[in-house]
Length: 309
Image (tube, rainbow, N blue to C red; front, side):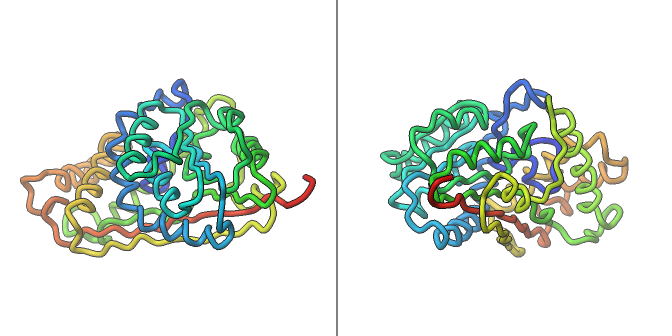
């Protein structure tokens, strides 16, 4: 929420284009301030989202209405608009400034005529949709909602008969560096990931009215009355040497770790992170040849039944 917090088992957990929360919940996250990082990450991951959309199009070839719940700045909503040229796309999010960016992007990409935004808290704002939804996409937005099962039930309720709900949650922690980078103690990223997982748990616990839920996403999709639940994982594999954009994204991720997790790291790991972020240091992320991006995002998908529900 993302896309965006100090938690997450992976980079994007905590930011990701997924934030749809109320601004009075966890620690008043300022999504708009995170917009550049959220946007850069989603742009980098666009090939993964495009492959996921192509896979979804086999299940849902001609959706009339596609909704991105927790759309953030709209990068993925625009990928969906391109993948489904016959669809109307609605980007729904709690942050007005992020939706403004989404509208500007749709305009730039020439899809504004079939793109609209819906501002308000999930899942309640979905009551404002005028039509049933053929394809519902929720990318790392669900985990910011206090009652995930109730939110899923609300999503499912908005589906057209035969409509598809696609939930991006889970996957693997992203990796950007080898285990031993020649400075500090080997295994830095695994330790950062452990702290991130703890912070993620704390973030969930601090949500007002939080309901604990086993993260069996296909099981939850079935529990809210959907059928044929299955999962598929998509890889983003950007080997070294990285493009300038990809390297800048990795720098932004480590800056995010520094800002949000720094107080939970030991002194030696903090010193390593500081060296990695120092543009003057030849072992930093700005100069080292061994920086890469390897990430796996899992999509859980299920359908509403046809006929009288």
